[in-house]
Amino acid sequence: MFDFLNSGSLEPLIIEGYEDIARTGSPLATFKAFINPDEITINYQVVADRRTRAGGNSSEGQFIGTEPLDIVLKFFIDGTNTAGKPLSKADGGPATVAEKIQEFYQAVGYSGTQHRTNYVRIKWGRLALMRFDPDVFDGSLKSAQIQYKMFKSDGTPLRAIITATFIEAISDEAAESRDSNSSPDLTHVRRIKEGDTLPALTREIYGDFKYYLEVARVNNLSNFRQLTPGDTLFFPPLAANLKPKSP
Image (tube, rainbow, N blue to C red; front, side):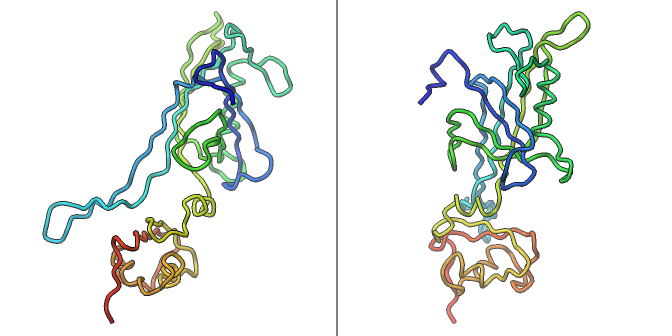
């Protein structure tokens, strides 16, 4: 395998833009750049239950899950050819810095039919994301900053740095598959869909519907029969939090 950390050359990073979160079919647009491996930042944040104990002022800090990953990438775009790697268009012709920035926007920017930024798939070396597939990052653009570093006498930019932050975005089906949702010893997070009931969801996760009242208590539900589609419910580890009431 190519050792990109110890090599003197830079691996090409590829960003593919898709209209649907499943990222099926061919991408709408593709951006390719050269990136310094030292310029990657991955933000990994744990979510804990911060509710205080009854009658106290402290919390057990019960693990709930993790926030979506943030990944920050810094691209160096060189239109002077001094790096030995001239910019190129898809057809093989020369490209300007402005054209490469437009290529970036086409891959990550707004989709014409969805009226939202594209879902992207980032491919580069071995990203080692601490979860899921280490070879790709599926997300969407959170923010981007462009810094121009060199200009021609007429103001045409010759060099630029794009600092872009992407937030993880994957389908519910992919998340459930990757999170090994068959285990009742993990905290599960489910987004309510039309027709879902709390007993059925409890049975699906724990293998027994008898815990549904305790799940309602954990989520502060006043009426377990009225679930609102789009809301999120937490199903904590079975042994840690759920003790069914005696009949």
